[in-house]
Length: 387
Image 1 (cartoon, rainbow, N blue to C red):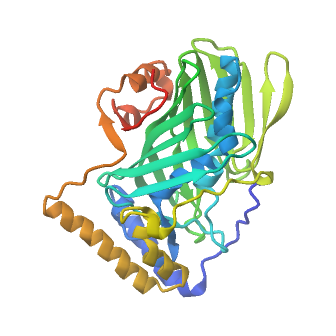
Image 2 (image 1 turned 90 degrees about the horizontal axis):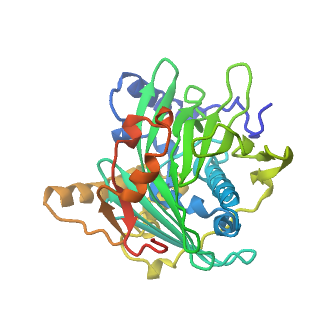
Image 3 (image 1 turned 45 degrees about the vertical axis):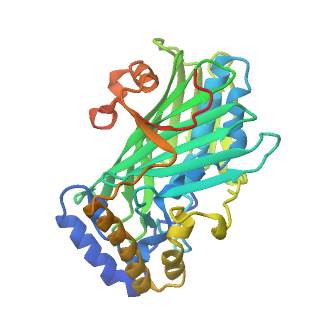
């Protein structure tokens, strides 16, 4: 049974088949990171990748709830619930009417996306600050904070992509991590990022599937999350299994299972009690509040890409490509002329001890050297709740 509600017989519109076919031929002979490839115009979305940070607060009440339990184990489960609640928006919510996953713009260096969410069910206001801190390789830094709840999440993410011709899929390694802090509790949580696969290419209906593992590691608890998707003969799309254990113990304390795009359950392994963990499809995602265009600076995503987005939305892909190319050329010229981009929100912290200490607690079995060889973090300049 496929709980995603997506059909597998979607086809590329006839008028776009030649363009898409050419793209697939290019992919089949390309080697290296496909980040630099030009995507077919009809597969472009009207947003910047930097805006994806907003999905961290699709359910701000879950983010605020992290600090509420008095028991540390329950706070660890709350971190898991918030993390899983971010995945649908991040990886499965942006399809158009044809249910085709669209490619976002590559942000320019120094680009910014700022948003906030009003109080929801007493959770307090949540504020997001995100910035493109590197262009080659592309890396976005994100900071989410709720002062009332005393919770913050600081992280960065980048992607390394390759095409697997034999499997007709794009494999994406997500580089980066997230660290959750609290004002009123001492522990911190390191969240590592899963790999992605972009499937459905030959059918012309690309969609994202998570694969591999994520780890949520705190000073005292380890949560291993394993992702899987629909196979040739069985299985559901977007499934996960998350197991909560005490550091160094094999005993399962909690197990969360289900689909990250739909329903999931939580089992308390000590009492055998089972409860609903999340029900994404039945929950109302919060809407971010973004400043009016006249109050935005020139580097904010909505203002920067405004006319490109308008051209894409109207189906004028020639104009969209022209305007997009002009923005990217200005970026290249700036680099060529040696102009420095001064970041407004984030600093690179080499040998970040918070990251290194938590990362060292993770079983090496779940660490991929390519992903976790980094030693530093992009840290918000006005970081709260540091201890």
